[in-house]
Image (spheres, rainbow, N blue to C red):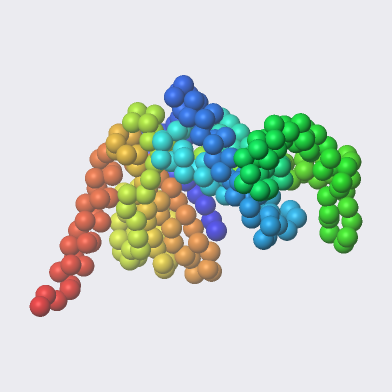
Length: 286
């Protein structure tokens, strides 16, 4: 796919990065680990049914990253380092939390599995803290016991710790990688919102050439499958991004991005509105 970008001489693209805000940082520090707890619990439950090595931590990381993307889109957090911080915190909690939830499920001493005799339950509750190992003791015992791997191998000691570290790294990397495409979307610091598609669809060759002329693009020849997409912030207070794509004779799809000022944006919208009127008139009315 060809990919070129043009910039109108009277208009510039908006800043790609949002400004730092304390509310955004606080939300990332609070909500990121909270999402991590949710996916840690989900991962712990899912491990009993489906937990292939490498694939499982990647899946947990992807789901964690998608949750963070949903958070920043809903709350309009635009500061890139803050978004990465939220993804990393969520992924770390998701990785370590699975071990802690397994620890809680292994030693549910608060749920007495004995007779309902009151004195017996009270005696067990008094002894439970002494009988239950700490989380650190539990995880060390798990490392000594070993972690089953593929081919009947068992990772014990520092090798078990290494496999857990690799799983955690995979979760963090997957979560961050998932957020990267979301951070490439332009962000408007005036109204504090991400750019979103406001209009788009397929157009005929004649319309594509008219739009290309307004946008200053002279690369549209005998093409097919022409499409357009307009993107702007929620407030419509900054430049509008116009994307034109088409398939050339050799099967190569070319894409051009142009930033439009208010005048040229209105011209493009007028052409599209006129096209819509023509289409409506061509439909017979009963």
